[in-house]
Length: 136
Image (cartoon, rainbow, N blue to C red; front, side, top):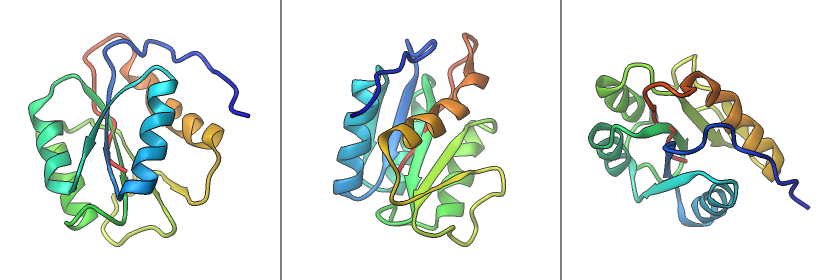
């Protein structure tokens, strides 16, 4: 059973998820149940656009599959508009081109492991300017 954890300063924080359907639906639901506002992107270009157009995005969560573009290109494009954007990669393997500052949460993972990984990237946001959480 998933332990309900408080989400510190979650108000105003937005997460973009870019991933294939099954995993996307699972992590989106989990994040929403935990108090985050989540935007789903159907591919990497849509995730990039959300990161660029929505200043309240706090994190990008992405997966190797389903982005439709090179993972490194996706992250560079999103960070062109937001250089300090935190990104979480979830997947079976670390993709070529993944920046060294982007952590990978290997699949399979538990809900608690996923929420801990998200929260580890969120403290830098604090109550200042929101940043993006990304696509999975």
